Image (cartoon, rainbow, N blue to C red; front, side, top):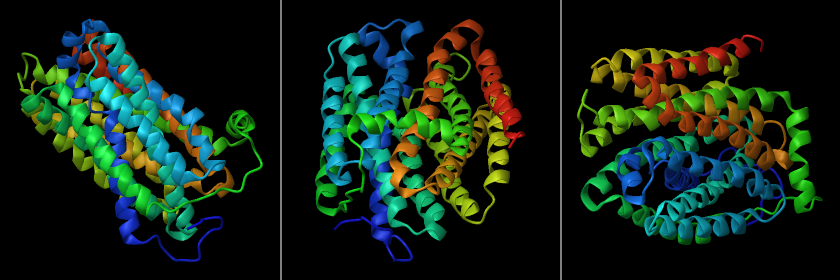
Length: 391
């Protein structure tokens, strides 16, 4: 099955939307499994408290590298083969991390997990290609629901598996699931051979001119980078707060807390439908405001209110996940021949923002506690809202 041209069907088949959503969730979860486990992993592999958040940061930096170096290949080579090979790399990296004897091997494995997980950003442009313009936001939003559910469930599942079998089992289970997914996609994923006159190096070289000449891409990427920095800042530090003397939660309790945050996944299909109806601008402003409100509540929650923290987690996820779909819907409308590269740039920039958030998380918490974390978390959406007002 070749997808050279925009199909004439009015929608993407439901079974394929479900397949893509499940695939995206299983793949992207690998970026987040280690977040609630850094307190368990760091002492065993010999990482100090101040460097513990590097586990999360390196995974995100690997993801950024894969976005720039691998995802643009979706505009050049046959997509199905590219996705399957990338997934095989992710499987090897997961086994490497789960068996790592020391910090160096674990951190290298974390970096490579990030690189392999970019397979998820090779799948989404295929879905956008299959879907006609009038339903594209809805389709992408539904698939992103699966991706975002994978993000949100990854933390509680990792905590529960680690609580029962130890943290190394988390990576072994994920590698096994990806092996089964790879076999399934081998049989069911449609082929797509793009029409391109580039070679690899000219393709990569075209990224900078695309970024320079596409103002909507720069704007949407900056919005999401700021919000995602807040997202990773919160979810990297809140397990430390919850396990501390103020709340004294076990890994199981932290898992249930993260599970409550999964309600934010409802934002993706809502955002996709709003974008299809032309409400992208106002929905973006609401998403930024919701993230700011989340950190205001998180500040109150740090004083001892678990309820306020739970609501903050739900609102944070709702704002961040809704905004990412709004951005994708906007950039996917710019042209199918550059869609993979636009997606690569968009994701790389906003995940760089996420890497910043997780990199400063441990330092901020050790320096100024939860109070400083929440002030920084408020600052990111506040600053980007000033930029939004220039739209």
